[in-house]
Length: 449
Image (tube, rainbow, N blue to C red; front, side, top):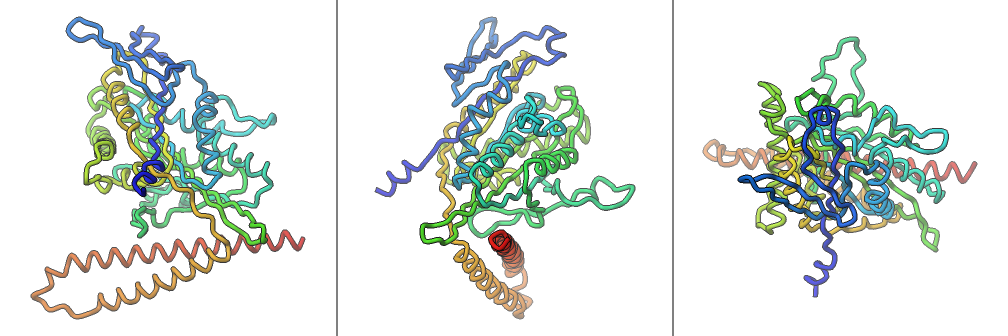
């Protein structure tokens, strides 16, 4: 009975395919087209010549968007329902994957400098998934006259180092790039997930505030010119929006509903020799490909139901753990080029995305909590963590005989990690309590005024 119930709850990861138009260089060089998109049949056909014979391979996806598809088309058909589910209390993830230069950042962000709502109340036509999602969230919340709070984070993962794209910059005329970006540790949260210690959470009250933060953070992302893309993203980015909405029971008790939207722009996969990468850039491309290779191994392990899923082999897969085989609703947007010159990478992307269709997540709506109960539970959790932390520290001070030193060294390291995890959880709980109390204060003030 329970196994059948679990199967009923399982939902496949949704996978979309988007093929960009020919670039100016490709048109100038009369590059042959090898991709044919059938949006209605949700199919992509790839033509290749093997031993003098033309062979077509056909891939089917949940949705297909050909070169003529507009940003608006992709968003309305694929993303609007996902954002609605976030507002209903689900955690959802959308991420773009593909070869460098195939339009991942354009799809996810568009031009951040132009991501502003015009006088007509609309975004520019080139606005990507992130600005459109932000506008939908605030339009919906305001139309419902809901009491809510919205927080955003924006991080970059580069060469296995996490930096905060919203961290305040040092006030100085000359700031070295490495000092400008604060490297942050990734910690287990004790609940099967991970959190980034020290990541700035910006509380926002309007779409325009988020657009400013998005532009600020995007300007800090590492980019470099390659032969495949003049402005190639050299890092993975994760932009998260957390929404708390206040509701009321018939008895008048306040409830808190929470949803989270993760928007991920992965660095471009690429053939190092074709991209023109040299020395440091080649090593950088190797690190990018390595993290994407780990992501591919995780997808394979999930699809083939292997006993061990190698989430911990890279920080990228640790960050995406709940989005792949976890409790999050996930959508992957795979991007490709129509040109024959990108055929090898296009086939790799299509194979990758086609496998990912078979991943099953088990999304769970976040439990609505009474505000008073939530604060009480958080204080209780803090007391428990403090007691455990003190006990762990006391144990850490016990004398260990010299002959047992090496045997106990690994335990001591594990204990230090556990202490750090508990400190992070305490900080997180304290921050949640402060946010809730601040919301309660605002609610009380609005009632009195």
